Length: 137
Image 1 (tube, rainbow, N blue to C red):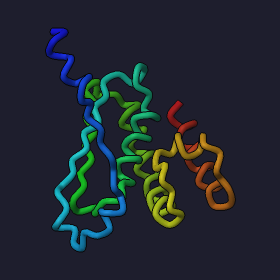
Image 2: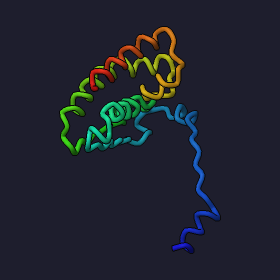
Image 3: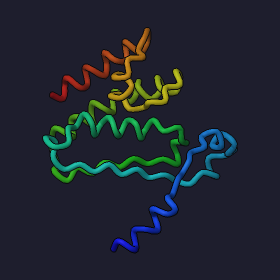
Image 4: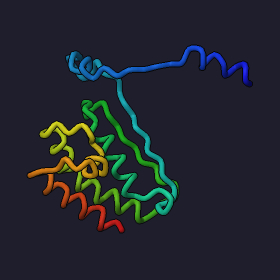
């Protein structure tokens, strides 16, 4: 086992992202379809707020909407998680346009509002987000 692991230490794999190359693609049909799967089982071990924030982050990808699919699998079948996603869907109607309009790169609502860079319209969005999070608890 030790011998097999040595190859990765000699030559580690490093990857870089080039988001500026994405704008060179002219048509959405040139991009491959992207499926995002989010799995959850227990609303007490995996709070629905975090799962909803993850789903909102995935929906806010700068990717053509006809080529992006987000799936949520709740193995526990929790009513709390279902309610959280109904509220997250309402919040997404204003969050996603807000991200695109203001060029927000941290698309997760939790991460964006914890970073402290909120002013003006972002404060109103924060109030909506907090209402979503408080309603779930």
